[in-house]
Length: 209
Image (cartoon, rainbow, N blue to C red; front, side, top):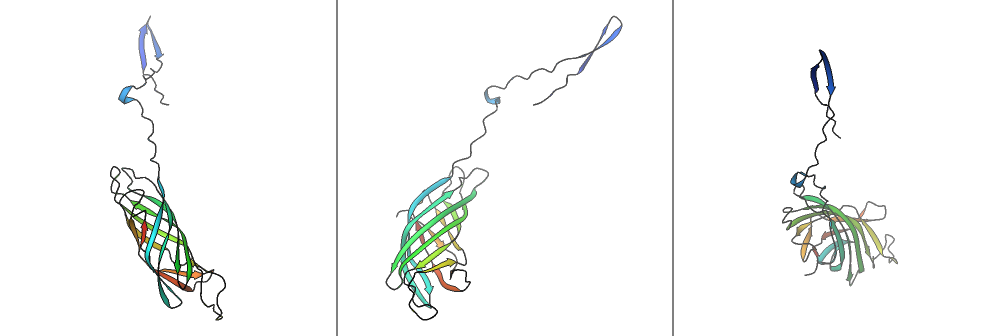
């Protein structure tokens, strides 16, 4: 609230000096274009869940390189761009499975966080997606244990290094865009820091093709 002090007025009356204080005038409420506009609402985030495929994933495990295809689903939430902020936060989840003749069922689950860099607020796509993902991978037929016996339980491995995935989204929800793995992803068992497996290739196709 603004408080305005009125100026003093000096008047001569019957040889005396009279000091008067006038009340502050009430400002008229603005109308039309001068009226105060309501605060603009933040744009709702972009959210979607969609199928994904990985053709030709490569993983080294126990001294061998395995190649397999995975299918599953992913979800993503991206903060909408504004004229003053074209790079926003992106988060997502991934769950994919594969069948390998030697390793049996392979399951990969991860969560990701990163950024989406949009073309502009009015025409946002294509947008560059840059994600860092951590998670777990399980191998049904884990092979032999350190003692030389056949493993009876699936081997569960945790990421030691985040998976760095990058690619362009040409629309939203995505449809056939590919995110490429930028680095080898080392995996270890439990609390161990010893690398048991490494994923070296992971071309992730998001959305239907």
